[in-house]
Image 1 (cartoon, rainbow, N blue to C red):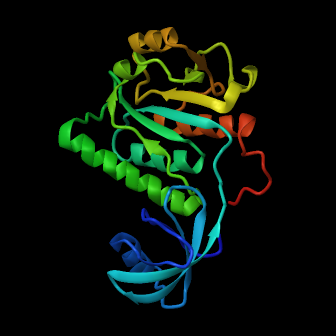
Image 2 (cartoon, rainbow, N blue to C red):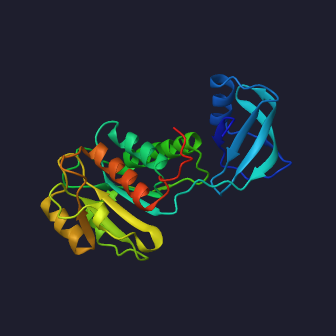
Length: 252
């Protein structure tokens, strides 16, 4: 990743001339000060990435020529869904951003009984689009070429009542749990759903319902972690134990 990366949700092909979306064009020219002849990397979420160079640029309109396609993938071998109870303030934004960096494949925002943040109607849709923008920006930064899905917010109980389509290991966090991640066998097929509660944790009724739907409670050491810490710590541990964080090529 030796040149700026941009998410460009357009059909891309080697040899084509493309006008960058306004957001990308403004960032490239106004923020990064890129000029004609400068190289950049584009990805459209369908896999792989494209090398391109600027051939014309004036603020809102920037044209590039695509000259190379690379079959580069940086996806985790695990298929991890983070089922995150809505968090207040900027905590949810941080969780979404860092979860993308940690290789999560799907983010499911859910409304728990103890969630401080409440979303519905147009406000929920605006927040959903905001999170999807965070996902795209995080992929630009961390090198991923496929965008994780962000599901529409819904109640935790409603989500729990739906059976998973495929075989999956379901985990939730509890400081009093009798087992840790290291005592569990690797996830068969690499499919994992991680449920994380809001500020104050899951309500007792939600814990019972999660257990009835196949969730196993695990602990992350002797300390009680905040909601914005717990999920990210668990994702990092999962990727280290069963995913790709053991690789020596990780960039920091």
